[in-house]
Length: 373
Ligand code: NDP
Image (cartoon, rainbow, N blue to C red; front, side):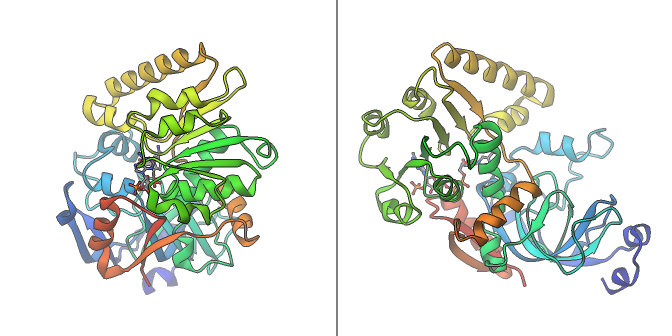
């Protein structure tokens, strides 16, 4: 690292090979595939718009548990190696961890808006090496200046769920700070990472927010400003929800049989949308391969979209999308006191296995964060 720091140019930096501590996996499987090493490859700046970030805290998400087991391997491998030049298994050793808060250690020559020493946060795309390491390399348009009002641990609880919520609600759902005031929004699964973030963002924008959650999370989500709570453990949620005024948008964080009834809760012929985050896209490509999986996905989404369109409601799939600019807006909301970090549990860097176990058990009440340094 010291050798790297003395060299200021990209080419000499990328020639410089060094090592760092990290948690890696060398194959897909259950928690025992997680391995701590002091000898992971030091990340290298390959493109002029990239930065190297020293990781202070990393957030875990359900996708880390799924990726540990091989979820999305076909699609993510194609994204890492589009020309299919490398041998299968070349993604290993793979570093998981999608959220990072840290400090920029080195900038590529085209990085204009950031400098060494800036405190930044980011959501790391799943095809890149993750944040369960001392350093990570990211592109300049994936990072944003971290909110000054948050510690690194708090900041690492937000980027992945925030950029997912932004992508689903703003880009797919068409919501923004100026059009939410008269809208009724339903969030299925309000107590987890996405639910607790989306609730706060929508409340800051003036929407009326109803969520479903377990009985023991009712008070917790109430403290985030939720207007109405339906306890899905007390009986069929669809019955309680269908007694309410209809909604302008449903964000589905639960999946399963929710699609059977949730679209019926929307105001028909008003532009109302159902956006689900639980989609079969990566399972299809895992199961059928890239080409057939994509064909199956396109057929499924087209059929469902048309089926619901004739009933006057819009059916959409929502996806995580990395975005520094979205995080810039969220930084402002956090520093204005409109959104707070909801950290459920903090683990040390030596306790990454325990942190995975915690996320794998489900029943999240906010986020699980690892303090790296
Ligand atoms: P979390 O694990 O943080 O939260 C899930 C929450 O849902 C838990 O609080 C759980 O609590 C609650 N829950 C479970 N079953 C129900 C139910 N039937 N009704 C209401 N609440 C329920 O997950 P995230 O918030 O991070 O993610 C939510 C979903 O979105 C996940 O399936 C994830 O894979 C997906 N996702 C998809 C992305 C994409 O790009 N498409 C990106 C990010 C997330 P309890 O069990 O106690 O009720």
